[in-house]
Amino acid sequence: MKGANLTDDTLNEVLEGAVLTYGEERVDNPPWQLVEQVKGAGTRFWLDVTGADEPDVQHLTDLFNLHPEVLTDTTTFGQRARVAEYEGYVMVVVYGAEADLTSDLVELHTYVLPHGVLTVRQVKFGPLDEVHLVPPVRLTGGSTTVPALLTRILSTMVATFADALEVVDKELEEIEQDILERPDKSQMERLVRQVRPRMSEMRRAVEPIRALVGISRFVVSDTLPEMDDDMRRHLRDLATDLAYVGDQLEAERDRLAAVMDVYMNEVNNRQNAIMKQVAVVSTIFLPLTFITGYFGQNFAWMTDELIPTRVSWLLLGVLLYLGVVTMTVALIRHRRWFND
Image (cartoon, rainbow, N blue to C red; front, side):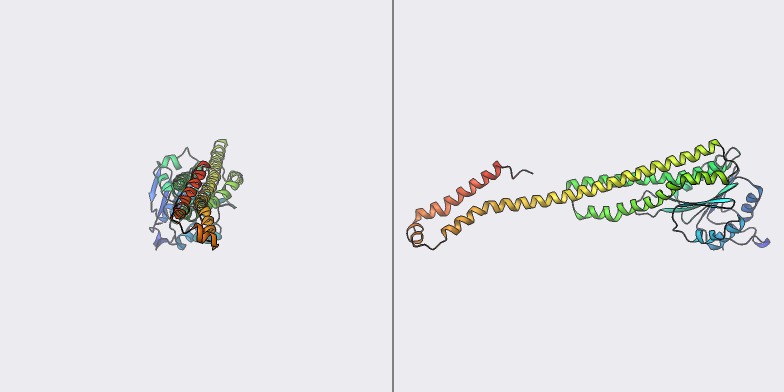
């Protein structure tokens, strides 16, 4: 069992998959007793929980006096990005993005408490795990504040979208080059099945939190006792990061539409080229068909006097056809129908 009630016989049980940073200390898989002591002492802390099961979430809900619906929210992931204010704390649901086009977004539930931050997620996430490599004194030391810690966590999640969008941009550039060389269905499949769903997924994750960031600044300001001008500056920087990611997302959406237009134009150009080739061949054979039909008529003078001679066969059956083909090709070249 990963967690249990804090009774005398379970004091040594640990919160598996969690990292507790408090003061100048960091503890992996912290004992529940230590978590309770840090919370009771009013020490600034960050408890980052990965892969919590329902008993663990129930235990956290009881320990930090969270709203009962937290149990449902945090055991059932897949929520929209949002900011919710409760009595004594604020819940922020944000997402992060892996650079891989095929990976799912990482959902993070963040609970902003008066003396610390509780984060809960289902899976490991490299960018957020790297924050734990920062010396604890810089995260929860005496000179830091809860808003500063919150801003670092949220900025880390937001920054992953910029990196993911760089991968999308390179993918679009590669697809565009392939299209210009030789368009085929595989390029459209990459656009429709990989790039466009990824863009839509990131848009659904970024736009709500971007719209709510202004509200969340005021909500956090009202909830936390240590807000000052410097901390408000940190939150404004977060809003700036979100605005940058939002603008970059819009730019990539425009580029996606442009690349799809390039594909359609190239396909149309190839079809037009094929139709031009068919038209050129038809133009060459059109006068030949007329000549054949004319001299194929069964008039007595034509069949008895003109056609039977060897000279007429040479003039009408060989030289006339060669002359017509030569003149037709010369006309086509003069009109530059063979260009492109």
